[in-house]
Amino acid sequence: MHYLISIIGLIFVIALAWLVSSDRKKIRYKPIVMMIVIQLILSAALLNTKVGLILINGISTVFLTLLDYANEGVGFVFGGIANEGEAPFFLTVLLPIVFISVLIGILQYLKILPLIMKGIGLILSKVNGMGKLESYNAVASLMVGQSEVFITVKKQLSQLPAHRLYTLCASAMSTVSMSIVGAYMTMIEPKYVVTALVLNLFGGFIIASIINPYQVKKDEDILDIREEEKQSFFEMIGEYILDGFKVAVIVGAMLIGFVALIAGINHTFDLLFGLSFQQLLGYIFAPFAFLMGIPFSEAVRAGGIMATKLVTNEFVAMMDLSKVADSFSPRTLGIISVFLVSFANFSSIGIISGAVKGLNEKQGNVVARFGLKLLYGATLVSLLSGVIVSFVL
Image (cartoon, rainbow, N blue to C red; front, top):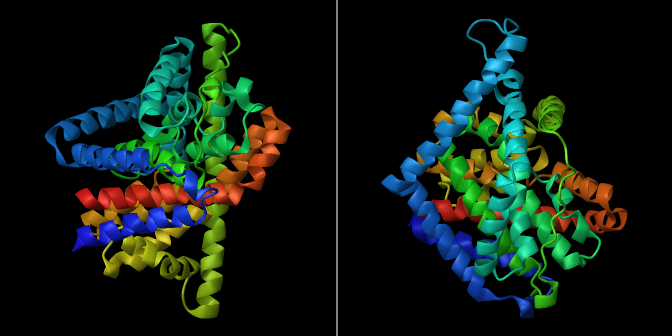
């Protein structure tokens, strides 16, 4: 029965993308079907095979080891602030981002990361039917972040038509930065984080190919990456340390604001209507949760967490999930966890349009105009990833 629901869910997600397509006649279904098959194979391999388990354990061990190293630095500076046995979120989850950011900077400086991004991007372009720039951008968004990625393609930004710019922005919103992957792994199971990263990479192209279909001409299929200004090794390390700290503080500030706001709204709704705002959103999102393969008995609670991610951010939703994880079945927990691993929320519209506007004001205004459509597409990517995982759990 759950296979039938998953198939209906897959058709439903594709149909939602098709309804807002800019040109349905240009949709190329062959690469879309191919990428869905690849998603199914990869999710089954990662979650249901010994090789996948070994790979995920290896990746999670690397990140957890890095977090241990990061905690050495955090403990040196902030040791003694927390009471024994307590683990403040900012210290244990957010501040390690600083160390991960430094490692990304070193890999960038040694030219290892750009080589990986170009290589994987080139392979992806053979599968997704899109250009080299779009494929590179999707991988680069995963590696360096949704706002920083536009700096690397700054040379081509002013020359891009709106339809190609949409794909670039959709990729940035559908993925997450490697610098915060470790933070996610402290809140949800690492195997679902890794699986979501892989699925979202292909899901972004699937949804963009339906909502925004086009074909890049050979003379337009150029990848012109901006080289970073030459710095000394220690200048670079200092810059990435500060960048990582800024990310940690910004995320922390957003969490303070959003968690407090949600608490206030929940209390107000409870007084007025006898149910919380998140419960109300849960009922609205319950059908989507059910079509992702979540049992009907758990759909309302799961829908509330999904909605929380959309209106706030994934960190708030993951915190809520961690509080009620024991009340969900393993299948539901896996599907929701995969859904949460992306930047698809309202605040990302401002982050992405602001990043582009900082580099090119005209193109930033273009991004702002299709902001809601961008969020719609990125949310469909998360739904698609959840549906794909429901086939194998």
